[in-house]
Image (cartoon, rainbow, N blue to C red; front, side):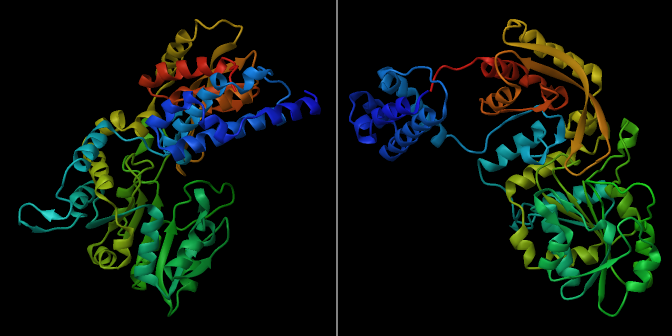
Length: 477
């Protein structure tokens, strides 16, 4: 398109007031507040301006480009975008099971039902029904957590970073915390152990080296200002080769000898030995508690498979200190989190049921036969689309656990690979991502991959419809 033609088209763009004065706009103005309609018109015209400025070709160039018949759907779409919630359900076809950017662990139906039941009416959040007096919100899950983990006491806050902050502030404010240099990790969202420690008021004392830390390193570092020995699970990476680390058991023994508390930031929240299900070893909460450690902190929405929460388990004496810290109120969880967490934890009383029904654990343990059947179902639904639009192939690939858990674990999976004919792979990915519901995929070797491990059976029809729409070139503005 020539520069002169672009300028001619730009001059023809109607003003906001001109659009609003047209009788056809009354329908929108009757349904929606005027300020929403004005903003929709402004953005719609802005989109038209961008199209004229940057597109090489437009679907139409004459006066019909500026007709209300052409622009009205654009304004409607802008209003829908303004009034639709920003937080939306998406289809995760990436193969990353615990995907932090996509909300981590999906909840079990019983957790969702309990959450709805508690949220739509009043609840006994902080009311003891037996005594008829004020109670503790934490009591709803403390007993279950202690039964499952073997801990003496438990406390739940809003996330694991909050749990670590509370523990460090309570036990070591103004004093030194000894931690191995190889465990000063950074996880997603730039969460760094040294930064959290600084905010807690504790002083960091590094020992050892990146790849090797010995018990003697801790012994030599202990002094009058030492308040705590901290072990951090390197959840999202592994140091391989010439390495050495101090076991939690040895650290606990050292703590006893010097009358120092020992805390284990375990992170992933694993309550089941996953090796019996063909997965790599991930330390469990029960194993940590058996060492006699004073406190363990874990996440609720990783391998545990529940809502976002930071769970602190350990000895009664320590937990009472955490509960009485004023920070606990600032970090406390609400009734919706409690409801979802309680229902999730109840499933763990039957380990087999937990593995089969908690979505995160179920996805981790799926075999490729089921994934292959799921992929075939999707391709069958797409069979009506001829090769003119795309080629669909079922292939073997690998999924990831994600969420800072089992970083070396590769999960054999099946993916539906799409090679579009008329669109670029990047355009197809964008169309899927901007669909309704959005479909999040990945690209590899000029193909778009949809991993069947993280797609639910009931999402197959939605996935097929989204693919068909994404492969259909649009002629609208």
